[in-house]
Image (cartoon, rainbow, N blue to C red; front, side, top):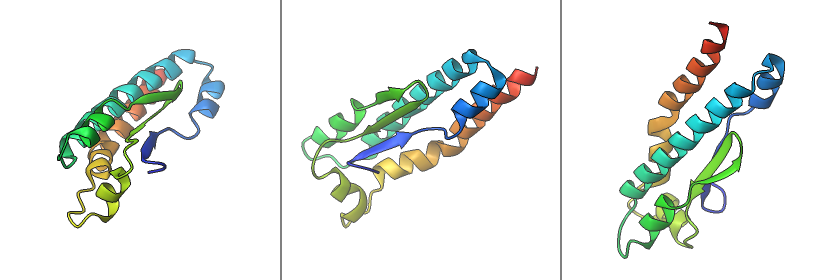
Length: 118
């Protein structure tokens, strides 16, 4: 988590795409990354502690495209990192969502790459 934001990115995808010369893969990975980022943002918001709802709302509305295959989400609220890492409840509301989606996201990306050989 950097500046209250989590970046969802696949390292090396540009090298693979250049090697395969298949731009459709970039689009498919981008769409999948967007879908999982939005899903994780919504899950994180659902896990977040609620007093006024500002933290929850800031997370749910935060997904942002950085480039074709990179998205990030998080919160711009000053206390978001405190709630995530140092609060006595140790909620890990953002990390929990990333942990829960890491394997399905990776499997989906792998399946997109495997489909190229068919």
